[in-house]
Image (cartoon, rainbow, N blue to C red; front, side, top):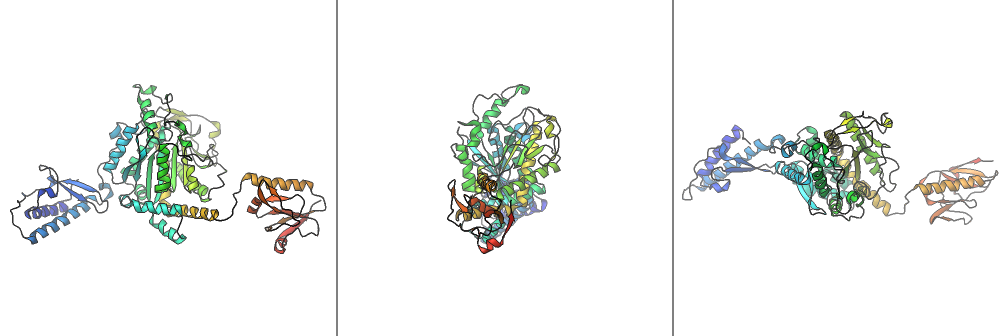
Length: 569
């Protein structure tokens, strides 16, 4: 890194004064033949060595040299100012704040997504550690050991300023997620201060190789790009890039790459499980946490970082499409806070819009596949119970080239497939590019809505606490059907001299001691024989009641005033 002429001149003056002041060379370090001055940038806290070959070093005086205390103090001040100016001049701009970032091509001899190439986990680890050393935007940490004893890595990616204050942002995320001991005003203040936390992962199912390789490419782009969007995302987000299955990546990549003839490579005949003990069922473990990899990830999710978005990347996409993306088919799980499905819808819409903007057809959603929010044992579905926005994509792709098939039903645009893709030959790199687009769409949405993301996870937690502190009912289809069946039975047996009243009030008591119990539930009775409704009917504003002409039906005056009678017969 070359200093500017102005900064170099001031440093030279400082060095002249410094050495004439009798200080020893060991103060600035380096070999005697190639001394190095280390400067620290206040903005990034990154220490950068600058070779002193750029300067003419005076011969240092020995300890016997006599200089006044006044001149020694001047020397220290001059050197301090010089080094500060040099650090500012050399390190202030983002493009100059880090050294050269090694590209995947330089590291592996291949670009990520090249046909017939897969990096294995050993290579993955080496590259991530290299990016950590070269970039001030990335910190690699081990979150635990795998079933086979490998370190399971997570990269924390953000701006240098944010990385300096990780403990504070982690504490804000924890307090908002737990939603205890906070007022709404305090939660808004924390949301304004905090940074949204976004998790994205790869490799859970190791033979689904596109997400694992994309983890390499996406992390490289995040630490090397200096476009306004990337810098904005880094300023507003704490991004957690998590490898979900290191043992599986090592096995699958080594198996695929073992043949010298690249056209014969395949991972379809691997003779053993790619996750110790459970293989593909590692995504069935997140409600019971039997595997060490599951424990490592849930520790991060629910005890350390509490991400507002968890993006779980999978393979393969529906035939005739490129990938499935959120939102998911109806119905969503009825126990979730409404902000969960609404949040999934919002992020999914942003993702679809970005695919279309970038000219990437073939994304489908909702009825485009069978995925839902009901499976409770998976990495991205378990998070719904913690008020997090869980995302899933399923993409096609293989290092061995393939074809997008012709599927007639996937050729006509509709709401869940607005931009169909043509049948064509498909290469691995295109799948990588699609997932990087998906990643950036999630980052972009979270960065633009940072404060809302943080406040909403608090609001959902607050709502859950309130619901759990009072008597409440969760509405299920079977309860609705019970009400409909009871109403149908009554209507089939009603006589012609009975009126039907449609009431828009709530009935608080029964007459004629007609309390009933259906399926163990408390019921609300009306003034009619064998008529009972479950408490679930209270979720509706329309209540069907019946009474003989001239009877009160047990309703209060306000309730009666809200009812309109019609004659049936």
